[in-house]
Image 1 (tube, rainbow, N blue to C red):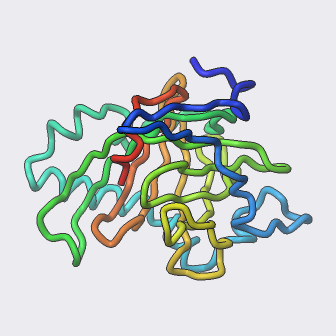
Image 2 (cartoon, rainbow, N blue to C red; image 1 turned 90 degrees about the vertical axis):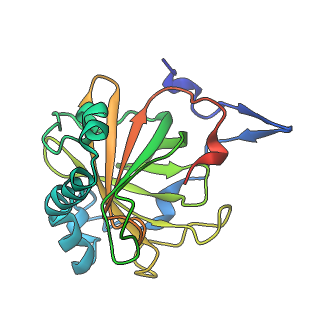
Length: 226
């Protein structure tokens, strides 16, 4: 189990020919501007479009799972257990600050993807930190690298409002600056020391990304992340 006190000093060595270090990234808190009078109200920050997308996550999830089942993916769904169970959320959803072993399962068909209803990617590093009254989340490696804040939203979920960098090592644009770079989702606890982030429309190729978060250092395969 990774100790929270080690978050700011953790150095992970990736062995791929040479050695490179993965540090906790700079704070993702710059992705939104907090209304001091409503510091824990995500609805004061989210656009109407994104608020609607968050409200429809359940419908998107059912549609994405139906696509997977229609393409023979029942065993694949069952193998993931609570991760892909829409009703698996448990109370106290906030993940503690630390370094996480994360991986993505991508679900559903779209106009740009008519054939592959299921994809599971190798693990990567992501980070949860504290900034003011809120937690922040950042994916540390890979080409699709979201980061942003986590907002309280009832006893069983948090809402993620953030953005995606246009370049693997580029800065995260502020949430709301460019609707095309906005990234939204919900975070839920699905077991002891196990969380997920559900991201609708994360890419044009899928209806839903479900990201598993485990507070443990991953194997050195971060460069294979989506």
